[in-house]
Amino acid sequence: MDKVVSPFRAADIQEIALSETAKRHFSSIAPMSVIAQEYELRGPAWTLRVDGNIVGCGGVMLLWSGVGEAWVMPNALAAEYPLACFRTICQGLQHAITAHNLRRVQSVVHESVPAEQRWVVRLGFEFEGVMRGYGPGGETYLRYALLVGGVIHG
Image (cartoon, rainbow, N blue to C red; front, side, top):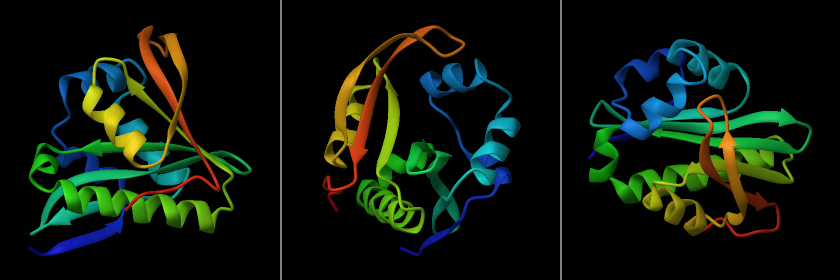
């Protein structure tokens, strides 16, 4: 297995087959090309490739001094490489926290995706609350946060 982590580029999104929940979420915000450009410009982000194929993209969008918003867009291949994905996310979070002196990294997860809820908890994020009517789609999301001094498992 040839695993390569490279800086995220907006064009990488074109190779991602998003889940139906992700498609619904992102399409209610802006065109994917606009979202990808924001992710590329506003913080550290990476693309994981295995044997030349994109497995997923993720990063931390810097919101303001000391605070970032974690995001991940897994491709369908991510299910075949859970350990590589998990380790890459852990390393990326640690890098973002250190390089940008973050005290808080937060993330949202759609209420209908328990697997993602388990992932963020395993990464050391703590549940903070229910966000009803969140975003342009007005759906229910769950807010999680990792405070520096918390544990990033991996």
